[in-house]
Length: 391
Ligand SMILES: Cc1cc2nc3c(=O)[nH]c(=O)nc-3n(C[C@H](O)[C@H](O)[C@H](O)COP(=O)(O)OP(=O)(O)OC[C@H]3O[C@@H](n4cnc5c(N)ncnc54)[C@H](O)[C@@H]3O)c2cc1C
Image (cartoon, rainbow, N blue to C red; front, side, top):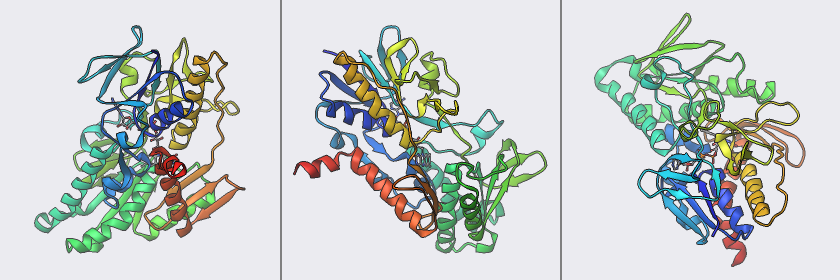
């Protein structure tokens, strides 16, 4: 029987197996993931800041997928593309006829000296919890150390993740200060960013609103300056040093290391895919989500890595595998963004939406939009919608 191996149970992998089942493909579908749970990566910053618990953003994969899907909990080490086998850490290699690689993202340090060793980044539940534990322990340590750097947090990078994290920290850190009886006037949350513009994907008035909001909550943003090195407790730029005992790295992402370990032609572990999302010269291999790079047909620029595009890609890949199995022509992938929603802590945010018109939103209502988007994602990926509809 034909085997379709889907690697990774993030947004793209979960959606791909759901759509393959929906397409009623006559094939064995195997989903491989390194944890028994799915996590909502779009909310990892909330785990890192401690405003949410892992149980708020995870669910059991086996409860969520159809019983037509075989679930293997194991770590993918590499893909032997010649023999069409997935090499796993614990189990025997998994032979496939079709491959859907959705192994997602890792943190990118761009080779900046010391960044990897001397800062904390997060790209899954464990690393997000490690950020939270370090931050809380370091703040609490001030009571005995009286080292002001225990009260300083530096966030490196003011991209989407950095800004969303700053929003959560600006809300949570004052609470921790009360809990640990810390001198609030000595607490500093600083952000260092190379780009002169913050949240460049949003219109100027929204990005300015976001910066003003964070500044009003005490966050210091230093943009337009390049980080040259990270030393233990120090973020170094051309002419300044930022001292802090909690340094969090959020400057960008690359795809899973499994991509380069498997010999793909790649840049930062992302592979430029064909317009049906297969890999050039390997029509049975599909890459979806953050391991793929898709050029926008109009501008030629690569689409950013988002959950939104990952889900749209998974739909097309499932339809294309079903088409191939049925001897039909595959579809080309096209994408129209529904917009961008950036939270600034639990009670504010900025958003530009292209749904039922064009909307530019800021303030409290955006946090409600964000909640709706997150809840919808869980509902859809966990099949709760189908369960409710069929009862
Ligand atoms: C803080 C933050 C906020 C974000 N906010 C938004 C947003 O508002 N909107 C939006 O559209 N996008 C947002 N994004 C981007 C979005 O989260 C990613 O683009 C999306 O998660 C990519 O989905 P994916 O399925 O490719 O990978 P992932 O979600 O990374 O899933 C990969 C899966 O593969 C598993 N895995 C990894 N390696 C292995 C291995 N070797 N073996 C087995 N399993 C493995 C992982 O455990 C995981 O389950 C945000 C990202 C972050 C970090």
